[in-house]
Length: 399
Image 1 (cartoon, rainbow, N blue to C red):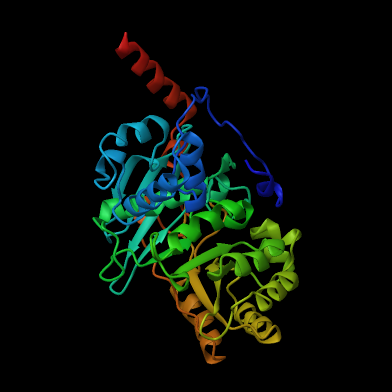
Image 2 (tube, rainbow, N blue to C red; image 1 turned 90 degrees about the vertical axis):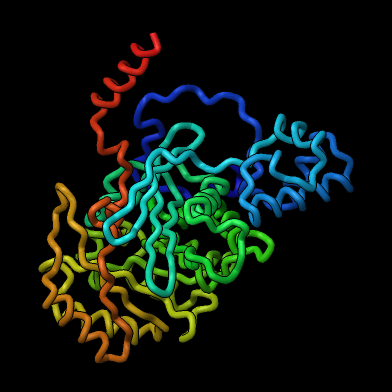
């Protein structure tokens, strides 16, 4: 971990190794997720002369992000004699796909595995006019939002830039969207709304998204990328300045008492402080509104009074905003119920009548636990005893 990744401490419980893992073996460096200049420097350090290192870095970048190459042997404009030399020293790998599921509504969910054996998930949501990839930034989560299934996991570690970029590349693999091209894509939008709090892994998220947004990289416009935060106030301005993507804020309540309960981070960065940071967010305007995510919880945050207070707060801070109302996705052991459809409509109408957009999000991928707030890896759902039995059975089969 670099020195700058320690700038924003991660609060809450951290479980560094939730189940026994083998010791990591010495690995070849992965070139995915690294800036061009770093790739050039690594090639030069490995023995290439400077001009050749610069040329090879450009070629590797093109083949990796425009052609979707997974092996150096695919890079036909690199001399065949040099391809094995590169393969002996470096890799260009994505995370491992453990399992892929498809919902009845077309939503796709992948269970992925890191090189050191930790599992995380990503989701692709197809719509008529767009296809949105929900990307994870951490293995697990530290925020413990009470309505969120993902929040019941412990944080294992931050995902690295190659593991974040790799999710986009894996989606392109699955959708058959190589070579990369700007028109006719199924994958048109990215939301950093998967597992984890992106602003507690700021540097890695920033570096990965720079590659995603690079015109010679994966080539998605920053206007098609949204980063969602639960309200890590000190990092919000840096996010706007250094990444420049759209901002979504998991608000979910309009009073201190209720938000303290359901989004515990509010005890550190309160609603007023959070909304002032939204007002100061670089680049926010009526063309690029801040999105407030608001999960609808029965008899908790869904009254007419709550809707009016939300309108008042948005007006008070003069925010260019829209509100996404999210019907709560239930899970076993959840302490809340979803608001009734009638209550959700009434809440939405109050906000709409104030001139603020407040659409109700249609739940997607519920049958594969891919809906908002439901991401929790399949490995976590199996009991530890079951995992141990499976491991013993595999060892017995080997002999």
